[in-house]
Every structure is written in C-alpha cells, then in structure tokens.
Image (cartoon, rainbow over all chains, first blue to last red; front, top):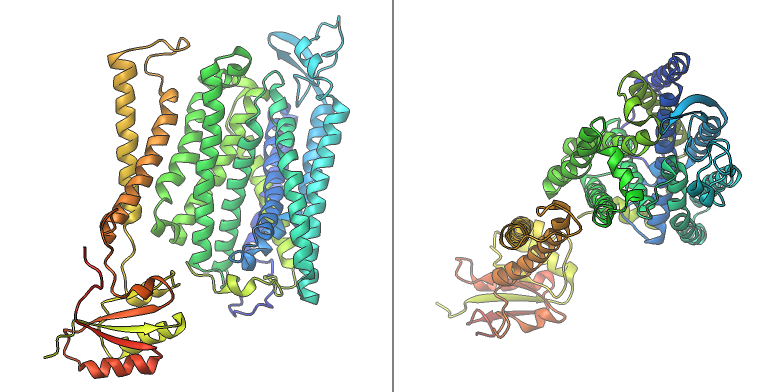
Length: 418
Length: 178
C-alpha cells in the first residue's frame, strides 16, 4: 500500500479484492451452470438478464457521469473522474455480455405456459418473440403484438440494442481517450473536444436511453406500455451508479489511493445520491399515480402482477429501501459527511436497485408461480458483482495516473471545499 | 472614556479582510461581526460561526405543511363530503400524495424565507440595520465592539497594518434605525 499524495500514483490491482472478485466470478459461473442443468433455465435467464442489464447500465451511467461533468463544466469532480472513466472502459464488455444473453434468451426455447396455453417459447421476451404471434390464423396470433411488430421484431430489436450500446461504448471510449491524451499533451484542446463530444453524447443518450429501457425490460411484458418507464429506469441506473462511484472512491481512499478525495467530494456525491433517490421516487410515483388514477386495464395489469402475494412484500420493500432509507439516513448534512453512514447507504441502494430491477423483470419472465429468491439470485448477483469489480479495477489500474493531471479544473477539484 | 461604540475596519479587498481577521484574532481582539457585499468562502469557519439551523427549520415546516394538508384533505374527502372519484375508495392515499408533496414544499420554502427574515430582522417596510452602507456595495467591513479593554488606537493600528483603507470610530451602532 502506498500512501504518498502524488498525482503520478498508479493503482495496483492486487490482494484480497482480486482473489475475492475472481472467486465471485467462479461462483457465478457455477450457479449459472447448476441453474441450467437443474431445469431452472427460465429463472437463470431472467437473473442473467437482470444482472447484465444492471452491469451495462452502471457502465453507461459512468459515461453519463463524465459527460455531465464536462457539459456542466464542473470543477469539483475533476479529481475523481478516473472512476467513472473506468466504468466507461468496461462498457464494451458489458455491452457484449448483455447482447449475448439477450440473443441466447431469444434463440433457445423451452416448453412453458403463457396465459394457460402450452407453447414452445424463447426463454426471454416470450410474449412477443413467440413463433406465430404476428401470423394471422396461427394459434399464437395476438392482434396487439402484431400491431406492435413494426417496432418489436427480432431484427430491429437486436439492431437497436447493438446500435445503442455500440454508440454509448464509442462515446465512452472517446471521452477516456481524450482525457488520456490531455494528460500527455496538456492544453485546452482536448477539454473542448470532450465538451463537444459530451454534449453530443447527452443528446444521443437522452433520446435513446428510454428506448433501450423499453426494449430490454418493458418488452418482457409486451402488452403493457408506459412512457415513464424509460426515465424510471434512468433514475434507477443513475442512483445505483452514483452509489457505486461513491463506494469505489471510499474504498480507494481506505487503501491509500486518492487521498485528495475529501469529505467535501463525498458530501457532493451524497447530495447527488440523495437528490436522485428522491427523483427516482418521483418518477416511480408519477408512473404509478397515472396508472392508478386512469385505471385502464392494459396499464393496471403491470401493477396487478406486482400486487400478487408473491411480489407484494418485495414491491413495498422496494419503496422503503430506495426512498425512505436515503431520505431518512442521508438527509442531514452531517450524515452525508460521515464516511461510514454514506458507505452504508450506498450498499443499501446497490441492493435496493437490484430489487427494483427484480420487481421489473421477474413478473414478465418467471411470473408469480416461478418467483424464488435462492442461490440462483444470489449466485448470479455475486458473479456479476465480481466481474464488474474485476474488470473495473483492472481498467482503473491501466490508467497511468489516478487523476487527469492536465484537466483544466483539477486545482479547483483538489481544493474543493463546501 | 470615549463615546465610541463600534470600531469599523473598512477593506477594499476580501483577501486583506481575511488577513485582518487573522491579525485581530492573533491579538485576541474579539470581532463583533463582519459585513461583506458577497459571500466569502470559509469566512464562517474562521469566525467560528455555528452551522445554520435553517435546514432543521425547513424540515419541521415541511412536516407541518405535509401533515396539515393531508389532514385537511382527509377531512374534506373522507369525512365531511365523501366523493366517488373513478370508483376509488374515499380514502385513496395515492390521490393525496401530490397535494401533500406540494404543501410540504410550499411550507418548507416559505417557512425558510420567513425564518430567514425573522433571524436577520428583515421585514418589508422596516429600515435595515446597517453599520456601514458601503458594505452592501463594494467595501468589506469588520466591526469590533469598542467596550473591550484594549486601547482603541491599537485596534486602529492593527486594522491599518492589515490593509484597511479606512477605520471608523462610530458613536452609534447602526447608521440607520427603524
């Protein structure tokens, strides 16, 4: 462990965390294999989709964090920009994993029941990707889904996913590259370039992220539609990413890196976590209230499913830990400035948004009868958490310095005080 | 015994003002207050001013507003005049949330504004209490209570040394009274 406050310090990825993250990956792989070989394919696929979506979202929101700081010309965050940049570096891998899982889920089929009918359906997106859903006269024909098939068809669906994730990855890659080149050459040229590319990214991201959420998650229940769903997902991914960034910063500091990150930086991150947890609740409730008030059957079915006894306690727990916990724990200034309190809140929120995605995904895949919470859920979570930790810290250790040394606002960030 | 009540050190530059505060503190001269035309970073910590409790006031006002309107709506829509809206229960909590949220925000913000007015003696129609009017424009002013034992000339010298452009010995605390 080195504890000098030099900006040239490089992160060395060794020790317990490396061992544990590799072990977690092994556990994950083992659990996935057990899941498939014990005939729990659908639930394993649902969990794989959940975690690979979570993984891809966190990496995408890492790019979003960087872009937001550049566009806002924020100074406070310059010294911790390497952490979200490491997320952005992992995004291509996360994207490939998500696409492979979605593709496999669409490709492999199994015998199951949809609304009492026995069918051979794909593991994921069984409602709209079922054979014959759009063919008139077929036993599986569904007029609503046939009407949506101009948008919701295999080719376009996969094409969109590849396009969106590819675009986010390229933007992330460019931002990291500009920052690294800036370190070599200095000057304002690359800062201005980052500003431009960030603005472009935010426009692209703002328009495509809701579609990405509609495709990946909402189309699991293809009859249902909610325009709030995209922003609701955005809020979830943004809060969970802020929590992971904060946790990474706190962890790096305990290991003797990034001593320049003070309570003031953590206070700022805490404010963002607090504010966007409230935003998450706001969007969640806006979606709920409109559906509740209008009371239209094709919309209420979404909450009807989540109101079944198998999901109801989880449904409430979701609100408690994603809204009440951050509201009550980190509302006060002092608790945002206590590292342990903030770290605990981050851990709560990381699990909280896992639960949030769980509530979104499970009713549309395994349904109420197939819902479980056992070793598959825990194992797949562990596997992806290990994978993320391993890849992200490896990416972080590849940076020549843990701080963008020639960032024009670096001094402001190093002397950040609130 | 002079009739001086307050000694004002008038500075042109915030850095010199901070320097002046340091010097006075080193010489154990108690500072009554500092007036600046704009917020200066870190000055409250240097002067040892306690953290503002405005946040707690805001929280309490928010709680009052939220529970008040929730109670009122409950009284209106459940107790006094139950209405069937879209076949919902009379006590349809989700319908109550938006107005509860709005009143929480309304009470918290108005409550904070009035608390601030109250604690700073700012009310419409009341002449503000100002020790030196230029502190609202382009001067930075340190005020020292002249009742202390230290000779007033020493204080004047300390302020001059620190870079004060002017030192005033005022017989009245405020230049304006209500």
